[in-house]
Image (cartoon, one colour):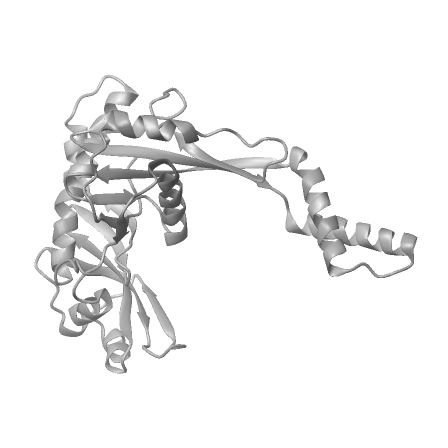
Length: 303
């Protein structure tokens, strides 16, 4: 359940739906497995897993939801080979070259015929809404995956006013200064991984892992104008992660102080454990997110 990535969005209007009201709205787009001729299927499932029908899990005002996407697997090489054979056969029969449109139609026909026999795989994407703090947080490593969930949620809610979080100072500028001046805030520990990019449009990129970022070779790159676009840091001995130029959080880990808190809480079932984990995680992030905005000069509410 613990989120590994954070795509962070600011709700620009108050979110007033109760968990029950939100659940009712999601019900119409509950997940259904792919039919034999569908390439993919997308819908809402229970955050608690297959043994629950509950689409919203609520704890201390935070509302978690989960989208499931099932996709059929059709190897491109197989499709291309079968399409080429079919095109060749038809061209021989008709003694002419097929048009581009005819070739495309043959390819679509082959895909349609293969779909019922294709394997499928499913992936779940978790998110939660913090009405009090005004956040929507998606556990997604890419903006595309986060936007897919948000777009689908808008189908249920009709309107969901939000924007990606933005700060007054550019994260690139702030992170670069941390390394140039060796002066990160006291609650931030710069770790051993970063990505540097030259400011030119096609500028070179340097990726460093398991590297002392205060070393002369890193400073040399910074002195030539390269800027930090990704940086591994830990915050207050509670969280460690990589933050990028868009304020996306990757490879998020909840450190021992948090895990000890979880271990000290006794639960009697998997559902109770899920509730404890979600409560601790969401409360921790509700403390961290305002501080993250402060680190980069405060939130840019006019973005």
